[in-house]
Image (cartoon, rainbow, N blue to C red; front, side, top):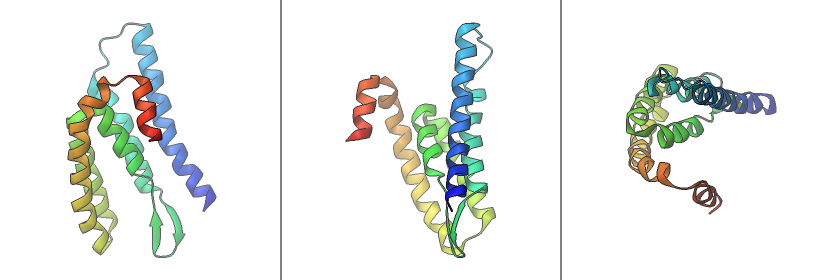
Length: 137
């Protein structure tokens, strides 16, 4: 179980680090060619990988960390990326099966995704100190 959990953390952190490297290259070389759609690939990649490689605790209890890239992508990507992440999450959840779990996902992901897309504009305007204090409260 620990191995699967560490792999899931790696699948979350690796696209975030790659995104930071792309931001650095964009800033240093003043590249305007890197648009927002290209930067949206990283949260989508992290979400898909977390859902494809879940942590199996027992035979009928499978746990993944899809909420982390979903929330981060929605907060930093805005409403367009949030709606895209909702659609991708529901499609992968439908294809992976799970009778009652899919219906619960159909209720929770759109509700939280729409809420996050409205909060995104205010979150991006916050200072770093306010963002960090928001996490700890």
